[in-house]
Amino acid sequence: MTVLEQRIMDHLITELQSSSSPFQDKLRTQYPSLTAYDLRLSTYIKANLSTKEIATLLNITPDSVKKAKHRLRKKLRVGCKENWASFFDVLLE
Image (cartoon, one colour):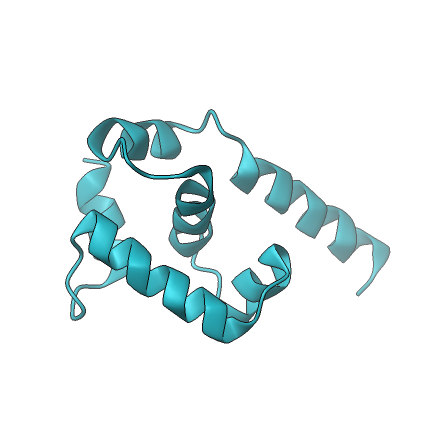
């Protein structure tokens, strides 16, 4: 990874982890039981990061990310067949 790519990635991570984003505020309002970890995972999913990319950012295994996504689906009551992107689009309307 070049220096420029690293700076872009660092900036992206900082922006995604910002706890004051309108997306996270809306999630907190509609789902008050979500943890900070759930909000961070939701933000990464909304940014369309792959399971492997999320695993790298969270320093966990891809299998752990899959389990966390499954638990998040249960908390948000998102069906297995429902696409994350469409769920988050509806949420932000």
